[in-house]
Length: 454
Image 1: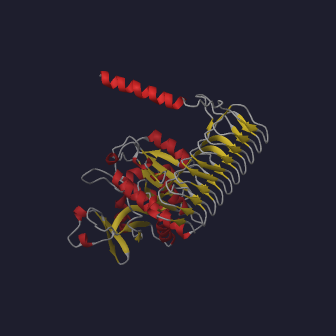
Image 2 (image 1 turned 60 degrees about the vertical axis):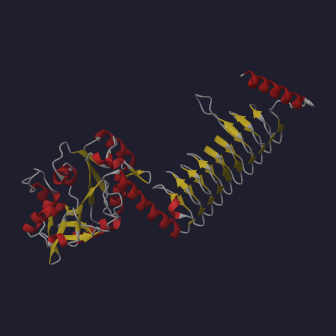
Image 3 (image 1 turned 180 degrees about the vertical axis):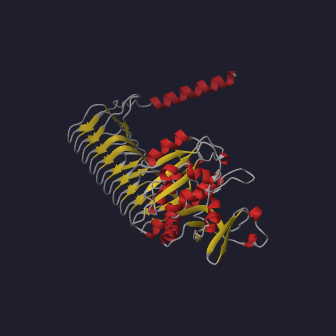
């Protein structure tokens, strides 16, 4: 089968009115990735070298999004909603290129497993003309039933047309199918619209194929794999299923999740063995974590690279461009953005590091701020190897602290500091003995007079 060419035709033209959103339904995300992109990835993993997306509602937005997650995919517009067979035929130009296998999929089934698609393709390789993917829902009410006889699929019967005996069938139509490329257009062109809605139904090719003596069979996917998304509640359900799968995958690969159900991964999170993730941690897109790191509770991480044996959190925020080298530490209530912390650097408490480099072994005291933005442009702060920045300091970029430099607590640093230098940038303290008592008595007297007068 590896030599067989394959095109996936992904139907994504629906309005998705039950989502109650201006965003096309299939662009709503699962794990930070549009649900239709998950479908594309599954098709690619099942060997579909080319993709055709049939779009309609929000076509311009769909084209723009497709360029990001499937830049080589072709898009075809279904101008009128005249049924699923009509939608597939919108991609006639792609189907006619002579592929061995055509996978027909729906953009709102983001949990489909590549294995289920590969199994359907295998049946095509064995000689079937049409393969329908079925599933067994907990409650089959409302689903079309797959009618089989002698190991062959003879019909897909909508529930309203089923006999009482057929309604007992638990094997239902998931909507997805695989069609032999050499038969695809011939079969689709024979689908009529002689039905109550006047639409062209893809499911009709089952009986058309059978009537021509072609083999039609069914394969089975799990209920989760076939789950379609129609509203926000089902979107949340699908997100939960995806996260559960990913958490298990992470733990089986050597990652410790203290409370798995409270950790949320992105579609592209990479995390190394022997990393420990405490409860209530969120990973956005673009996170790469090496081995042996520790991510403490309530950390929020996106677009960050974390090297081996780093320590992050609790309550830390790493934003895009954060790059932590080996054994670097970012502690509680710290934020790092577009900055590199070199090996062994420590940013322990209540600190903002943005557009900066913190050299190896440098220590950044509590309450330090890199002042990187003047309202119009960003500026860089460079902190040298082994430097020490005292608590409650402001480093006004562009500025550099040399190797081994020492910044006194409470300083506002506006000029670069040479290697091994000590810099102060604060007002000199003045102490007036007894003045505190005098002020207290004066203020208390004024407050009492105000209260009495009023």
